[in-house]
Image (cartoon, rainbow, N blue to C red; front, side, top):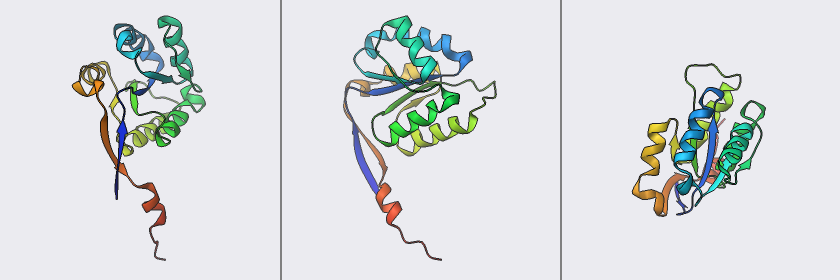
Length: 152
């Protein structure tokens, strides 16, 4: 069963970046500071603190990614507290928390939220006409999955 949920005009955006991509994300945030200032921002520990320190934007931070921050962001997506993900991912370096990263991307996809994994996609999302509007996303009814009968 499908459920419609609205992403409001004011987005709740998580900012995440692997170590080799933090500089790139900070530069991108600097170029998009005006737009980002109209939304609520969240971030994994180091990334969120760097964004706040470099730009002055308020960012609610969670743990560092390897210390559970990716899982905390995923939980907030499930709870509909976060509805937009900018994750500058480093595909060239193995991460000690790769399973957490995969789980975060799975949750973001499952809950049908916009996700940018690189600068080009983030630019396209932020220049979309949908950034200034409410958007109805289509997700699943978790309760119907929990209530389904399992035959043994």
